[in-house]
Amino acid sequence: MALMPLTAFLFQKKEENENVTDELILLINEIAAACKEIAGKVRKAGLLGVLGSAGKVNVQGEEVQKLDELANEILFQSLKNCGKVCQITSEEVEDALIVSEAGYAVAFDPLDGSSNIDVNVSIGTIFSIHKDSVMQPGREQVAAGYVIYGPSTMLVMSLGDGVVGFTLDPESGNFLLSHPKIELPEKGKIYSINEANRNKWTSEGLRWFIDYLKTEKYTQRYVGSMVADVHRTLLKGGIFIYPADEKNTNGKLRLLYEAKPMAFLIEQAGGLSSDGTQSLLDIYPHELHQRVPVIIGSRWEVEKCLEYIKEYG
Ligand code: P6P
Image (cartoon, rainbow, N blue to C red):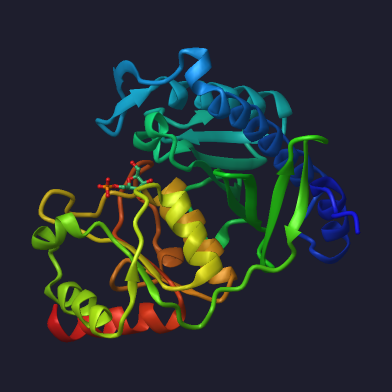
């Protein structure tokens, strides 16, 4: 049975979801087309001489990889040309680009997990779409999603009424609806956190929680690429945590184009998100590149984690 292409899905959604306008459909198609182009570069990176460092440091103080820069350029051009975007925010650029007064505002991480590029491990593009401005709580997102460049290239997104997944068909070049309804298991068996930082975590309760999971026979998986770790959590359940520590007192992950879009997906799929005190979707952004602690995943594990943090600090 032929799987539904992305565009047909979006026009079908337009009938049942008032947020899905012709402009949003065009915008999402632009992002999907840009990510197809990025996928092509990622798959040939070693042949194009675009591996390695671009020899500069971005606003995050992180070394920019050549492929980061290429992905950023591709997305910027697509969003500027599509004429439906009023404001563009990128992890790689200090200030938001104001294109016009009203329209859709997009925040994106063009290539997340870039430390994994040179070792051929899954990386991804993350995007968040608001009306007019991205400086709003995540609950107000019109749409959010990611494209993961893994063994297959998948677009996973939500329009505010559940989570769907599309797999890129290399022959046709279409994103086809391979996962019509992604729902998080109530409870998983996997926890995902960089335990090398254990002694630096500011929360003692978090150490107790991780030790508790070990007695409950959980397994540990950590790719070091948020898109890959969240994708596994969405499909298998469990919990992904990037906590505050002595070095990163607000955690490492950025609210606007990492934490908020991923929290939107996880909550739309039936899971929970938190910065340790509140849902990540209720945080009012105060600066473009602000960082937040991230606890996202299955309801059971997130609630248990918050109980330990409440109990032990
Ligand atoms: P660490 C990649 O650099 C990234 O921004 C996320 O994709 C990932 O979850 C995290 O940082 C990994 O950070 O400190 O564990 O290497």
